[in-house]
Amino acid sequence: MTNTQSHAVIELDEPIKRGDSLITSLTVRKPKAGALRGVSLIELANLSVSALQVVLPRITEPTLTAHDIANMDPADLLSVGAEVGNFLVSKADRLSVSPAK
Image (cartoon, rainbow, N blue to C red; front, side, top):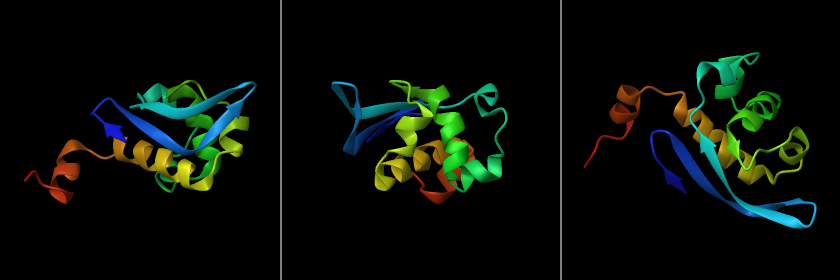
């Protein structure tokens, strides 16, 4: 998994099958406020599948559908959701939890 302040690349344990192709990795962009519309931040921070099904299609490359997300391996969904959660934490809070060595 590669993580920058603006995006994270996640290698999937179980590729997502779409037609004749397989999605083996996802790029998740840091969402702007507009990408979070209609979703409770608390639900998103709690990794609600319903909240992730709304937000992930707006911030993933390739763009995931709600159907793709519903059929994801739970471990992969947790990994992707955790990255979304990391984007919701302020820089200062991230540094206080894991200070640079």
